[in-house]
Amino acid sequence: MKLKKTLGLMGMLILFLNPINDGFAQDITPNKFQYFKKIPQMGKGLSSIKLDAQVYDSAGHLVPDIRIFDQDGVEVPYHKYNGFSKENVETIDFRILNLSEDQEILRADFIRESSLVETYDQITIDIASRNFLLSPNLYGSTDGRDFFPIHTKGYIYSFDDINKGHNNIIAFDEVNYNYLRAEFEIAMGRVSPKDISKVSYTKNLPYIPMEKQIESDIVSLTQIEKTTEIVLDMHYTNLPLSAITINADGKNYYRVVKILTGDEIKKMNLIAEDVISSFDIGDYKVDNNKIKIDTTCQRYVKLIINNEDNASLKIGGIDFFYLPDTLVFETELDKTYSLYYGSKAYRAPIYDISYIAAHIDEKTLQESQLGQENINQNYKKQDIPFTERNPYITTISIALAVGVLGLIVAKNLRDK
Image 1: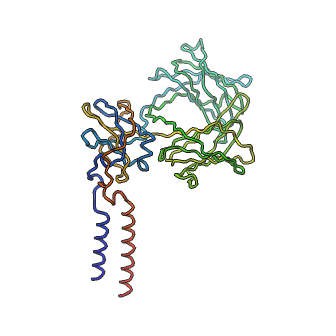
Image 2: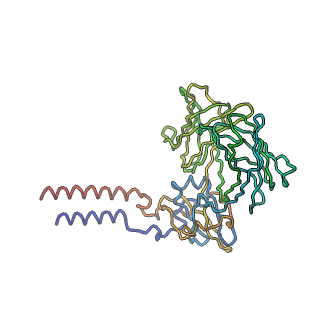
Image 3: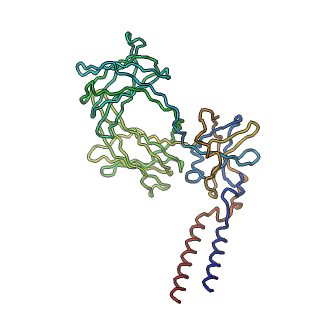
């Protein structure tokens, strides 16, 4: 009997500390968010906005506490995208007409096969070889007789060392030639004509979110034993960092870089480790100074560059980029909208629009920019229940209840 009473009291305690509520049935109103940004008026239909650094800085981790309201305070469903799926693909296959070699120059002629694509701005050349560097010269013709130069960008190369890179795409301004003639100067390695196996043009047409650059300030730059340590102030926190570019002066170098982040300079956690390098022979140069990252960062970032036994690199600058999320929602002609954010009480919503999101064509979206940040004068923190403002109470109370219950059960078993 004593055990039953104890269990009943424990259950009442848990319900008292954590009242049953439905996260989606709560009365969520604009006055429960600290900040808002107005969204410029748009037409009827599906519209989109991109989150900015201020929103990430004031919202929670992974921005769950953002809501859109119209001028009447009615919540508007949205879907948060990192990008759209790749569906549309353009392709062209080129048939190889002839291959030859003359004094370290590879020559190849191609003809475009039938295609629905009229123009193209790159070709992919599959070469069955390793450790080579080719400088391409490209020419185009409509009839296969008169060829005209095509200004190309970059080199064709492939190295066993993954950090030195691999590239088999020749890029150029858009053309519509039926015939292509390529001359490859062999700058390094050994490649024979028979190694050229396929030439094609393939281009995915996805929605590609645009990276945004974020300004940062160097707090300190120090040399410690064989490493260079750079601490930077991002001025914002919670940004979905996508890339860091380290602009270093020098050539033929290879450096391992560790990236740490934290809200305090003296307390940081490792989030990535990668390599920056420069490969330079004669007039041919391949730089690899951009480190891809897919994580949120805090206000401070530390870069630790391992110089081994080499002289320190001269750092010309460091650029940070983040990939903003896109919100897609439906708008009406006669309504205005605002984005509200900055409330620890709410988790990310799940709306019906999320289930049809994969079928939305990004080309049909109206895009708008967020306005300036405003402090919500109607924000009332006290209106949010204590347990919602302090969600850790749920975990602690349940853990305590389970612990006490376990002790009581164990004691009752011993008494028997």
